[in-house]
Length: 136
Image 1 (spheres, rainbow, N blue to C red):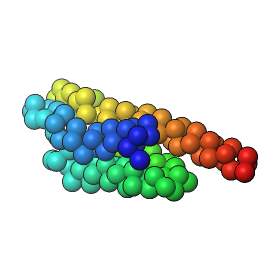
Image 2 (cartoon, helix red, strand yellow):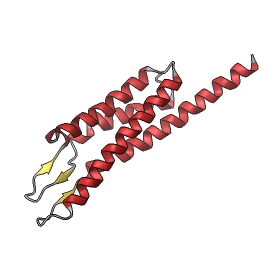
Image 3 (cartoon, rainbow, N blue to C red):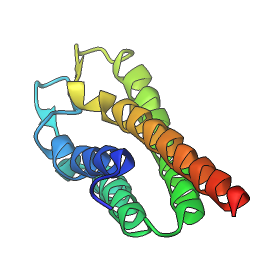
């Protein structure tokens, strides 16, 4: 389980979703107040769900097909989160007060990259198992 590279990628996704959004600011409003994930309930739920799906996918190491599907679901959740951040950043730029985008908005992009790498490794493992079963 832990010796597989996709487990490392999924652990990184879990850490990105559970810890990093609460340390890095997502954006700053017009008054200069930094907004973190814990200030927005739905964003916190989305990040925690991303981390939970990654941890559940790690536990499904014996069933690679379900692990693959769960990672795809996690990618879709991260795409929705990224879409919300893009929508929010487009609204921030039209304010009369100057506001800043934070580095925390990049977390879903990094998570999607690691999930894609994990899915590639899972697919490689599945192909290896199929080739060994063919030889029997």
